[in-house]
Image (cartoon, rainbow, N blue to C red; front, side):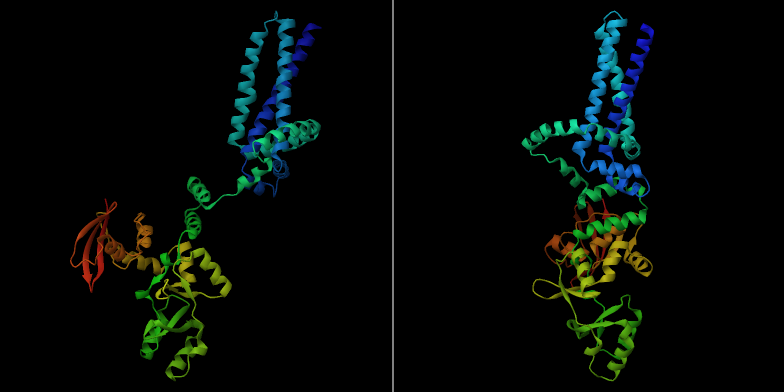
Length: 415
C-alpha cells in the first residue's frame, strides 16, 4: 500500500512539473511572439488565430497562466513535503532543495529557453490548452484582476496598451531592417530603405538644378526642339521662352507631333501645353508624391522662398530615388563619377553629393549645399580662384579645374 501511494505521489508530482513547464513556456512563447508573424500564420493555422485572440487581452491570459503555474508549483511542493515526511525520515529541507533545482531546470529555464527560440511555434501549439485554462480559471481571474487592476491604475498602467507596442515608427522600422536585412533580398532591402528615407528627404535633395534643366526653348530653331524631344528621358518637358524663368507650360510627349506642327506654323501653343505647377524646395518627397497622385501631374518646377525657380522635379525622379538608377542612367552615373585605383573619385563640380554618397557608400554631409561645388564654396566661404586642396571632415578634396568662377572638376578621396 505504501509503495502504491509513493508511486501515485511521484506520478502526480511529474504531472504537476510538466504542467508547470507548459505554463512557463507558454508565458514566454505568447509574450515573445511576433504578432505580424502570427497574423501571417493565422491565414492557414487555427492555432495562430487562437493565439492572436488570446493576446488581445494579455491581462487575462497572464493571470490564467500564472494562476495555473503557481497552483502546480505549490501543490508540487506540498506533495514533496508529504513524500519526505512519510517515506524519507522527514528531511523536508532536502526535498525543498531538490524540488527547487528540478523546477528551475525542467519547469522554468528549459521550457522558457525553447519558447524564446521558437515563440510563434510554441504559442500556436499551446493556444488550445491556454484557451481552456482561461475558461477554467475565469472566476479566479476575475477576482484577481479586480485587485490587480486597482494596483495597475495606481501606477497609471493600461493593460490594453500593449496592443500599441506593435506600432513602429520610421526609426524603429529602419533598425528592424538593418538587424534583419539578411532575410530580405538586397534589391528589396535597398528599396525599403529608400522608402523609409522619404520622410527625411526634401524636393531640393533630388531635383534637377536650374542650370541642368532640359526643356524646349521656342526661340530656338525647329531642329533643336525635335532633337530634345527625341532624346528626352522624361515623358514631359517644360516649354519656355528664352530661359526656364519664362516658362510657358509643360508638353506631354504624346502631343509632340502636334506641338512641332504648331511650332512650325507659328500658331498658339498654349492649347497643347498643360499648366505649370510650382512647389517649394522644402517640401518632403513623400508629400510631393501624394500631390503628384492627387493632381495627376508628373512634373513641377521647384521655387525658393522668393519664388525664384531653383530646379525641376518629376515623378520619375522620385521613382528613381526609390528603386535606384539603372540602364542608361546608371551608365551615365558611372561616367560622372570616375573611380581611380587609389580609391579616389574624379567628379563634376555640379554633381550631387547625395548621388556621390550612394555611388561610393560615403557619408559626406548633405545638410548644407547639395553639390560638390556648393560644398567647397561654403567651406572656403569664397569662390576659389586657383586649384587648392582642402579637407572636409574625413574627405580630402582637390580642385582640378575652375571655369567661369565655377569648380568644374574635383578629386575626392576618403582618408
